[in-house]
Amino acid sequence: MAYKVPRGTQDILPEQTPKWQKVESILRQLSHVYRYKEIRTPIFEQTELFQRGVGDTTDIVQKEMYTFEDRGGRSLTLRPEGTASSVRAYVEHKMFGNPDQPVKLSYMGPMFRYERQQAGRYRQFVQFGVEAIGSSDPAIDAEVISLAMDIYQTVGLKDLKLVINSLGDKETRDAHRTALINHFRPSIGEFCSDCQNRLEKNPLRILDCKKDHEHPLMQTAPALTDYLTEASAQYFDTVKKYLDVLGITYVVDPNLVRGLDYYNHTAFEIMSTASGFGAITTLCGGGRYNGLVEDIGGPDMPGIGFAMSIERLLLALEAENIELDVEDQLDIYVVAMGEEAKLKSAELISSFRTKGISADMDYVDRKLKAQMKSADRLQAKFVIVIGESELEEMSVNVKEMETGNQEKVPFSELVNYLLEHK
Image (tube, rainbow, N blue to C red; front, side, top):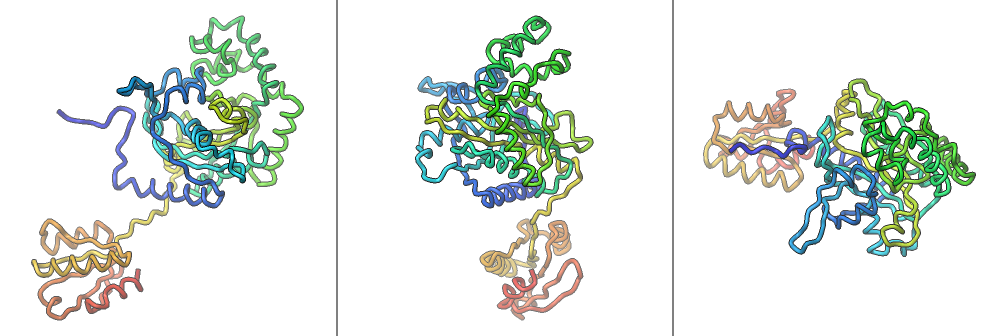
């Protein structure tokens, strides 16, 4: 039987991992600069956490979760996103009692959603995200957006578009909800079954429907921004002022609602405008979720965050023909001719590696010419050949592969020589 990778998943091969590692190092560095400290939560949680935290009217909960019963009969779900788990940890470990608020968290790891595989979208995907929990200051909204933009700009992306909206407070949402129900109800039979189910439960989610997004009523639906209370409008204006101060360009889109039930006030998406990127342009999304901490059993603490797919980030780099400057240098390749030379090579390589010098040698007893070809394929910076004469003289010719220059160096000086010339 020929085994294959499960549908919707992928193998990330050794020639691809340096790009992933480079992106991950940038994410960790910027998290440090912005002071978002890493949290690591379980890959599976109680199913109810996501039903309550993500929202039972969302596509994620209704259609996309990987849910199973363990041997004790408990319903568990592979995490489809990171916010609910982070908030659960915030509540469980009483981080709301920390004297310094907001608590600023970052996470990175695999998430799982049963959805149709598309370019840059998988059923197992890697997500990076941040959460700032414990502040209702518009300045932290701007900081979170700034961090997301900083990530994409640091990796070199230029074809970016930031779209923002306000989902308002409870009073705003209630008034808008009534308006949406009145708008869609006369023709709801023309919409898909999901939209029909959402009409009474959460009509805002109709605006996020992928099947009916071209329906004429979508274009004339009441805009949430028209129902903003004075306090909500002022909050949104303040967020925009901070974005202006930070020099961040944005577009206000009244139809941006996001796909999760817990959002309110600020919502945003970052999109790729690169030609050839694909029909689904969203790279990153996030927003404010005041009330989620309380829903999950904690005190009334506000929060805001975002999440981004690493796969889609790499796809955007490809669309803009950007090559990451990855460090995968092999410092030295040791060619051994004979058993005694091989023993000496192993000894030298060990001394190189102890000092942080990357080194490799042949392990399949190839001839000299084949070993030199291997060194060339591996793009080794230096090559040394050890044979009988080198063992007798206790020195070796160090060849710089790019220039062809050679220099005779005693075995005892090799480490220092390589450290000086790396």
